[in-house]
Image 1 (spheres, one colour):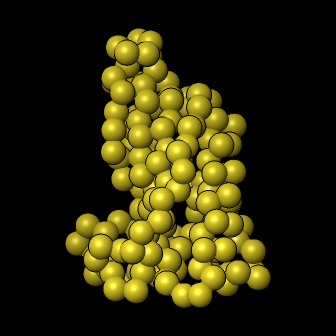
Image 2: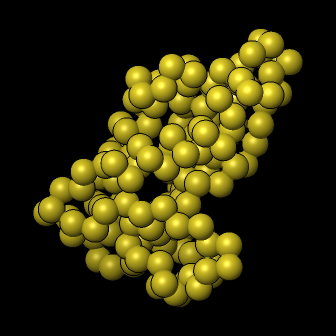
Length: 140
């Protein structure tokens, strides 16, 4: 498995989340903002950006850890905190099952989801979840 395949597994897991229709019904949709107009982003659009790599020499010869920041975008409105908190639970539950879906993934670890006003989209919030995935590195 390669780091790009880990990213694909993260994206697929989040996009497969079934969203409660009581909270708007928008599904999670991966977006690659490179060259895209940020104004075209909808509620629950998300990115997965590589933010770190732990070389295999520090773990075992065949294991590696890659860290991603998963950032979900939300419109700012009253009680959006409830949606963000519920979605954080949904995302973490989905990503904790990565190893069940792929034998080359050993573990996914998380930190708290941080929330801040978007730096480039007026009226939007960015909820960012750091995830570190330990996987079997193959195909090198």
